Length: 443
Image 1: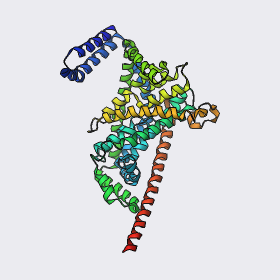
Image 2 (image 1 turned 30 degrees about the horizontal axis):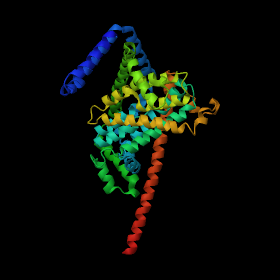
Image 3 (image 1 turned 90 degrees about the vertical axis):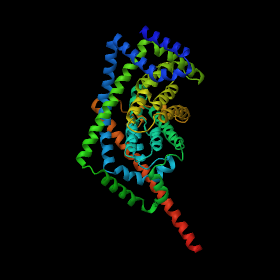
Image 4 (image 1 turned 120 degrees about the vertical axis):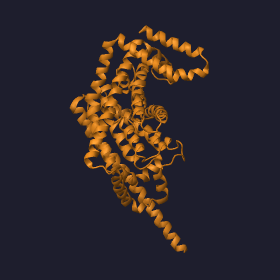
């Protein structure tokens, strides 16, 4: 792999010598081509390692990702085609619009994304944009905080399988979701006042709280009539599109498994690890976490796994590292999102910037939670709720548990949003009635 290092040094010197005006072309055109050539050379020199890495990525996709996500992908698109998402959009607009500055339809994407994990939030946000149910800016706001890790991954795969401490799942999940909501609140100001969707103007001008449910039913009927496809065609299109998306996700998982292996064999990983170690020293974290952070920069599972096997690192610092890695989600997920939203006019830049903010906030919230919840981490396994005890063994048992767990969380989130929307609607109705009585008295 010395050829790869020589070529990288040559490229670095070339960037220093060439005029500044030509560096943009080098970064946009020549650098990606050179990286592809170097990876190809690495796979030719180490075919066995490349094959094993690809096979490992395939096993993860086939045993866990594919069976766990396919039902959600299919039924989410069926619900969109049947107009149920439009119904939820009108019903939950009083919550989503004031809080996150996105359409009410975003509540469905939010519930699905928080319950089912990467990259379902990106898929559904792209679907809303393709169907013109939200503007470009609103879709980018929505994408920034709904494409999160699923709870069973944090409780089962990370807390139990990687950290061997089921109690830590509570802190990881709280830090992850609190930081995701904070990102959503921050992104509501992204391009505020620009690129407003049609349904926002309708919400401001025409929405009557006392007729919210009837308006939601009317939206469902109208959406179903505009779609016009029979149920059989809706189901067939949903299965076909979901299979294509999952094949894309599987390809990215296998590709990044190979890329990480090639970087490790080339010795490039060591160079970046030393840079990350210097940054960790500045923020007063154990420098031995640097390999985990580098791996997590590329792929979320490998980064969390490396953090879990470090013996001399305290559990608190492991939790901070894992929280940041999960929030960042890895360049593998970023590449999946970029590919998923490519048919739309959405930009990947706001999403990537939001992930940086999410990672910093997740680490910060984790540090805050380690104070009051430190005793929770030290509890015996017997005191931990049943859903934290699930060990991700893979295969049919794991994906079945994940399916049930995610489905229950999805319904729970929607139910909570519905209660909040109902409370807001009742409050507005009382305010309107009170204003009407005051005006009547003055008349």
